[in-house]
Image 1: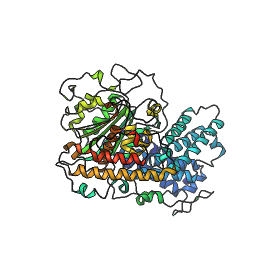
Image 2: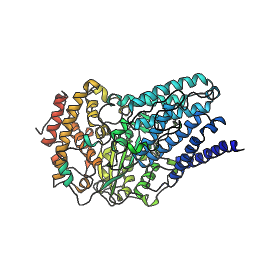
Image 3: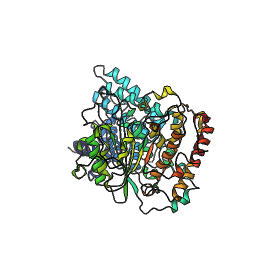
Length: 599
């Protein structure tokens, strides 16, 4: 009877942990309300993990398989990732990586019995493990691991089709193809500077004293962000598109370099390891404490939405706005097509097995943010909603799939920093002057992308992500795209020198912004926030490059807009700004592509 007690207790702990996990997995990942259930679920899995370690021999004798240990570890890794998506805390993402990496290195899903190898359910568990580990590695920019996992994932999909000929693995093939497409977009730049804020690259010694002394009448901290993308055929993996992936990283701090230097653990054929643990099933859950940098500020919380409806977007935005802490600003990034294009055929989506965005079916409406609003433009006159909107839906359906500028006005009761990336973005100018409490910052994309080659201009830009978003997250990559330049490791010195030119310009512009007396309060109150200050500097760069670019068709459709206006000293016509663009153009040997009227 005593021997039966151990496996019975183990199974009971497994079932209890699974029930608790289901509640956390289905909880919305937006809002700042405390998630009381996460500690309970974590405690349940740690208790289960500890129990299987202490009773490993008895459990193995009773029939415990290695894949079952791997499944527990995979659940813990998934639990950490869910918490990262909810809180944006880097330590949870690192913990998730640690567990997934241990599963891979110890081969928990490999070497099982012949019966287990023929188990279709087990094969799906292994496929889900690879897909989830791919996503975690991608967000951490562990490109070598991503390549390794993708190769193994491809082989596993092919083997699955051979082992289970009566089962279609179409969904997993789609997951594989998504990752291949995703990697192609930025793989050439995988060894360049990170998208996350890195003090080594993104703070400038010459302007640092001015930034330190700068203090506006009101200072806001970036605490929350909503990131949403909705384009046809856009490159994505799971529910993370190229644009939301770039913005997610742009709004985080680069983790400590010690993470990339951590000691590897040797694993032997019998499954034992040569690390500090004496038990083969031990994963060091405290290892992340040595990898995080306590001096870094916390990442702003981010709600990432993939293809939401207009009402779902507004409901999530209301939840975030309602819980925004005092003296804080929320960033609202919306990337979608305008409603002025041709009607498109509904695009069938095959939902993957990896979930990253918020659970939209659990959104609770906040009625106080959905009071009727007057549709107004910047001059105080009414505007017809059907003429100014962006499109959120597979088909146009009498406005139900459209997001109108006036839909966002209620959320200006709190400080907001809007980034609208659309071919109809300029219609959102009506937000300026129509705020309901707090003046909002607006960065509006060009209506059309710019390319040196006309053939590239006609290509579907959503295949490689938005050019405007690329300027705000990786400005030199955007330049490479505009001029049709190819990048390889041989161009590393060229890129590094270009980065130095841009950094020097940013330091000079940063000093101007901190010392000018004409800076609008909307920008002044967020200038002390490094993540937002970097975006503002990159917008100035983007606007100057696109304004000075020599093109046959001269109109405002190719130039981004900011409201309220930034000081004239950093305008595209400023000699200081144009000289920096000219210096970069000469370095890249593309001076003939520009016209500098201010020099």
